[in-house]
Length: 75
Image 1 (tube, rainbow, N blue to C red):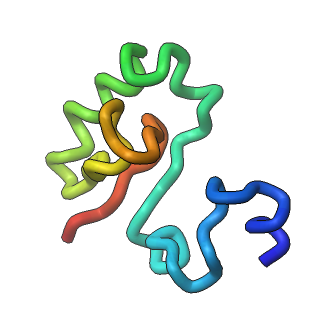
Image 2: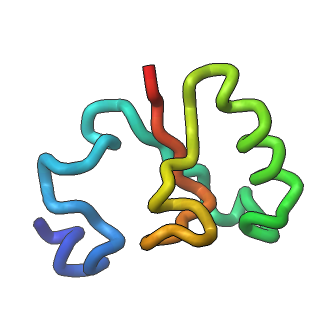
């Protein structure tokens, strides 16, 4: 709960995040220069889907909480 207090909605309520289940990853923002337009993001987007990782709708540029660094495992 401390993270929620410190980081607001950037930290999930305990027990509600796919990160805790090993079904989501965040790539360090420093490793994604240029965000959605950066070479690293575009490579991840194009290649991770072959391994069942996707950028969820809410994390896309037009989504409700854009996060270029967040990918989720789909199965």
